[in-house]
Image (cartoon, rainbow, N blue to C red; front, side, top):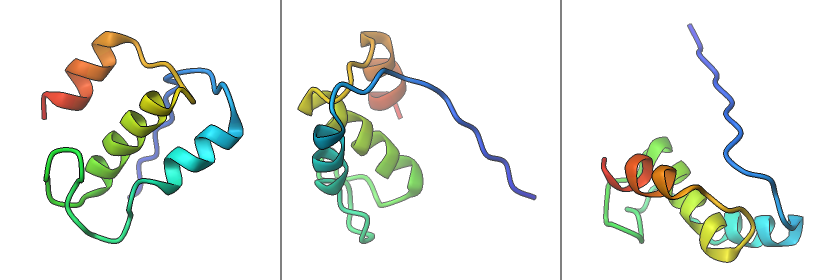
Length: 72
């Protein structure tokens, strides 16, 4: 069984910024450079969202950034 979910979190401001931010987040199994968490798909997505937000490619609402990304 496979469950796929898609949630819109922000409008994209620049595809170039998106590409650069996504490419800056390693997907090689190494721990998160942001908090040292072991690599999982979940930690990669959180790191990618933070990289996208920090680069200005997207703007995450404050409650998403702190509640969803930093509380786990």
